[in-house]
Image (cartoon, rainbow, N blue to C red):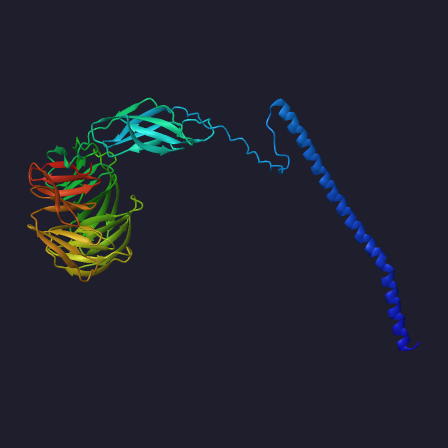
Length: 475
């Protein structure tokens, strides 16, 4: 078969196939057209039937005298019916119960009550508060109390509350509760609590507020005072140890006394003053460095001035104190004061020796100072020194170059640090702000003050009559 003959055969076959399929396609199209016509005819018949039904219904309605409708109008689209609204909350919360009012200060009253309940569905929202029958404020639930401040002193106030819910329903007001603010009494100022005669004229005075014991050191020994009841102080005992006492410090019921043994050596004696009327010798430790001088405590350490230096002692075990270190000097050291990491010790005859005490095992002499203080007190790095008529305030931050901050004319005999205040034994007891150096309070004394010690809000002052007074400084 030639190519031409093959092509003609294929074309002929295709034409034959198309001719054979044409009647089938035409038949399917005719069937779909017929089906559409039948559905349209059915819709038309249904519409005609609905119109006939409507006409018949109108005739019946006319006979009954009822309204008719337009049968040719399209049927109305039904309007969706909304769900029924929940019933409105008209139930008020329960009335608050058990309202109480109590004054917490001269200008404030605390008011509280039992919470209300709400069953209406909108929920409890809070409370209206009334003071003396007038609306005062709202308190939101779940809180059921409040503090009413800025009130007048010595005045009575009455309170009521009413509960409200989310729908605005309000209960009736609760029963009234009343309270009266007290008078605002002024804070008591410093004053003498008690005075005891016959205490003597100590050269040194120490006091511990925890134990309530004060000790005065004089040439004839120690005088121990019991101040556990500051309003009824009393001299409890007098102690004259085997050797001359040159320094004393106290910590709780333990007293630490430096004894000078014929200017050649010194002891550290520990006394138990649990019963201040019967002092008990606990231990006696020999100290290096010649004759005895002053003593100061800081924590469990003692710093003792000696005839030829400064000795540091560990007091962790009072029955067996342990000597830790020594810094040698050429003169005897008397009054000793502890600052932040340094020691000042008054020399004989005058001036002060300065020591670096940051390492208690290796205290180091730094320099001698010629400040002409008769007595001094340290607070951190600030020193307060006294002469007969002047107060010197010195910054010891640089031990090699201390800086004079202030010098005031102030005729006081002794000074003690009490927190942020200074207590001076002068013609009266003067209480001064340690920063501004402004005298805050003055307390009259029976005689001019000589020695002063302070601790825990109390000040002990000895005067020229040989008595001492206990003065309350903090309320």
